[in-house]
Every structure is written in structure tokens, then in C-alpha cells.
Image (tube, rainbow, N blue to C red; front, top):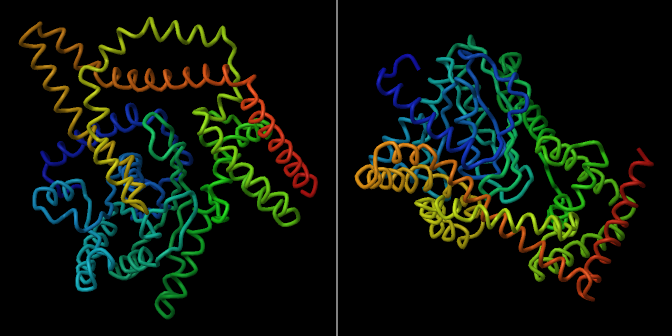
Length: 460
């Protein structure tokens, strides 16, 4: 923004670059930006409307992945209560949002100031991001939209005398795993919607204009995301898309290892289940019940479905064990001081998990913030100074520059240990009565699902 002080701008972009490195290379394995060419050029007044599935991670991804655009986002007003934190958040263009349940009715009037500031930023050709659902969901579905974001958009247009062309960009966030480090995420950008054609309607019937634009925005977001509307059977459907859905994706010609392709396959799979339920609900409900039983049995046996699907040979397992032994010294080195980075957020993450409800979805964001802003900088600096004093400068520098990559290595090494143990456990269980019963149950369920998918495809 041109009015900002040069040094403040420099600090903002330096800090954003650091966050983006930690976000894109350390916390996540891959970031997919689908339809990024749809983002209007800088200087276009742009309101981003997004689904809200992952509390802190959603706005963070928008902040970091809108190209050169500086994105103003809204955060809970209570985090602005401390002056230093408030100054820090505002330096990142974050605005306070007051909510009835959290802040009380008297505080809602303060939103007018925040909205006025957001309108000013829009009219200057900048970007404001908002989540029409008002709160994050706890599963993969799209909640009801509040029209507040459209009051903001049309309010900005009205403030310009309806001269400015305010555009709304629908965005969908999608995650391979909500909470796990080194998973994948995708940002899917829709087609910008100009609200200028609705200006005349807005002047006489503002609510009608808002509802019509809202329908267009919601339709795009709904089409781009995975929206599981059958909440009664959500757990079973979500389990099946991550297990049977892998084979389904491959059979439909998608690569299940690429998140955008797996997303498209998942949307097809969920729609196929909905179609199957129209004529064979009794069969489908039995499949859902069996899926939950299968999930519980695999958990009780301390394995996961991918272990059964892969069914690794002893030769492969032996190679994995040998590789883990060879890399063990590097793993031990990588824990200095990365064990602090990995474990420091655990207590706070557990607290949010235990709170339940929408607070569960803070886990990933808390892990990222604590690690990237607190434990990593402090522990890395401490080791660097110690090695600088006790060893020499070039060892200290090399170790400092490699710390982030050693953190990623330590994470994958730990995960591989868990995976190898699961593979060994399954090899031992596979030919036992318990293991054979589990495999048979899985096979019969997969056959039932194959039958349901074929019946839906035949009708289409």
C-alpha cells in the first residue's frame, strides 16, 4: 500500500516471506493454487469470499497466496485486547471482528469502524477477505452464509457513488489433513463476480441484490469444495472417501496422490453415494454401519486401511527397517533442537482439542504459529549462538541454514517408524483368525460399494 512507511512495508514483506517459507516448505508438503489466473490484477477492488474449514489456516493461506496482493482479513476482536498484539495484527492488515456470542451486543457497533476501514481499503484497489459462514466448520461441508460480506461490498460501491467496480472472488480451501504437518492443501480460485450489474437493483431493493449475488458466490464455492451434506452419516462417508475412495479415484482416472485430483474424485464419489441412496438406502445404510465398524476394528488393531491395501512384502519392510537404522544418527542430530519445535505446541494444541466444538479446528493453526513464531526462532538462535561460541562460525551457520529441512526430515522419519511398525503388525495379524475376519469384512464392503457405484454409473 502506497501510504505505508517504507520501513514498515519492508518489514511486512520480510516477515511475510519468512511465514510463507515456513508455511509452504515446512508445515505443508505441497500447496496447490488451482485457478490462480482468475485472481484480478492488482488495483482491482477485490473482496475474497471463502469457505471456512480450518480456523487459523484458512485466512493464513489467503494472506500468503494471493500473489503480490496484500490481503486484509478479519480476526476475533478479543485477540486485539492487548496493545502490542493489536499493533502487531494491524501491521499485518488484520482487522477486528466483533461477534454477538463472544463480545456481547454492545460491542457490535464497533464493527462499523472496522467495516469502514475495510471499505476504504477496497476503494483504494486493495483486497479484503471474509468468511461468509462467520465461523469455521468442523467438517467438510458448507454452512449458511451471512450477507454481511455483501453489505460490505455494496457499501463500498455506494461510498464511491457507484463508480467503482467491486469484484467478489469465490475461493475454496481444501485440506488433505486438517491437523497433520507435512500434509497437502489446495486453494481453488473461482471466477470473479462483478457486482456492478446489480448496482441499479441495489438502489431500490438492496436485499434482493444481495441475495442474488450471494446465490452466485455460494454456488461457485459449493461446486469447488467437497460438501458432504449428509451429516447424519458424515463419519462413515469421510472414512470411505479416504479408504475405498483411493481405489475409486484411480478407477475414475484420477491420481489419488495429487490433492486437486483426489478432491474431484471425492466430489464424484459423494454424489454417487447420494444417488445410490435414492434407490438403495437400506443397502447404503448397512454399508455405512459396516464402514464405522471396520474403522473401529482397524483402530483397535493399531493399523490403518492403507496398510491392508498396500500389503507390503517382507523384503520391502526389511529395506525400510535397514534405511531407518542407517538414518538413525541423522535423525538424532535433527532433533537438536527440533524436538522442542515439534513438542512445544502440544500442550496448547491439546487444550483446544479438549475444548471441543469449533475450537478443535484451531489445532493446526496453533501448531503452526507456536512453531514458526516462537519455538523455532528461539531454539534455532540458541543453538546457533552455542555452536558459534563452542565450535566455529561455519558449522553454526550451516546447522542454522539446515534446521528447517532437518525438522521436515525428523517429522517424516518419525512417521515412517510408525508406518513400518504398522506394516509389521499387519503381516503378523494377516493370517490370524482376527486378521482374516477383518480382511474379509473389508473385501465384502468394497464389493458392496463397487455394486452401488456400478448401479449409479449405469443410470447415468
